[in-house]
Image (tube, rainbow, N blue to C red):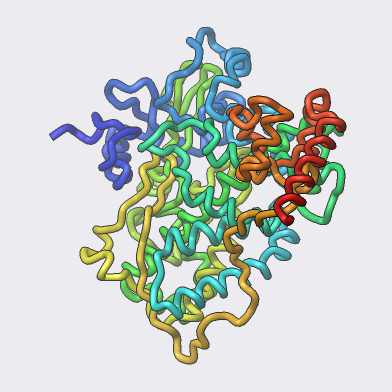
Length: 522
């Protein structure tokens, strides 16, 4: 049998299911180790992980999304490759996303992000979180059970971040469905690419472009308006594309780790004897429990850095151009830092020192939100249930039947079906209006479409509207670039291409669409 250290972390599904045994095998060779035949080093030590994550001068975050195994788009040369990294930034996967940025561009973006997760914002958002979680949990308990990941965890965190940002109600169902169908970041079963008209970032990016453009012209009292009209610390205004990419990344990537944290926490609740009774009896223990879940089975297994200068990790020399896999999940189980590292202990001292959310300038900005939303929904589960258990009909072998998503970045369950026994006095489904959006109704026959009110995607989905577009803008309906604008109206697109989308052309489209609607009625 092939030794663990010789197997490939990035393609081996068995290692995906149990990364901990793999990382422990590497740890036997020291806290910094280059596996045989690999062109990257793996850091498993806790102190060494802190060293890398805090050293922003020597280590670039540019390979954070593509990972340490992907080849660099250039051949490094010299003792400092900072200029090479920047010259090729566009060739890295997600090179301009905040998770991959360095130096001043990263500082500027984080200044914008700081407007999202302030204590006052989270406090205001918590009432919505409580209402939504109460409705979702009551519905699940009334049904006697639920598939936790797809029915609760993913839609719950998607709707929470949508509410926090100010995504319009009418678009939230589309976002829920888009996220639900998307592969996890670092997906092993497909390309780790951010491209193609059906990729969630592309779909959501088109909508965020419309939101930001609208908020710049018509600011409201929401975070999208603040982002749209924000300035960098030096007083300059961000480019529209920078704000759009920030908004869609925070929405699309940030929610995934929260959903996985909820699923991972629930796995311990239903498998560790006595745990749920302890938490149900004393909900004040939930925050400490979540920190321990983050340590022992956090949502992010690893991140990656590129040495852009000759440096050291511990006593190991690291030449410029070296790719580094930072094994967060291994650092959080390092026996040199944690006693009984493979055991879940709610009262573990100094538990918040874990690195599940990273450390340094790139520490997860959404960590405060994740802690709030998962705590609140767990409180609702314990309030409304007397017992939570794995559904034996779906998981006859218990926890052994639980499968993890094929990702080298994310540690999260693909599905988990639960049986829910109601608490004494459980009153059933909530009578409050549903906070969960329904699927959008199709455009009614004869409805008046327009360039000012109708999103491009809706025009393209309507046969008559599509024909009008093709008449006035030949080839537009089949242009793959159009996918990036489906969430915008043509009037909003005018701001980006005024020479193409003139007032005269758009007025002519509106007149024809109105005639078609009138003819349909008569």
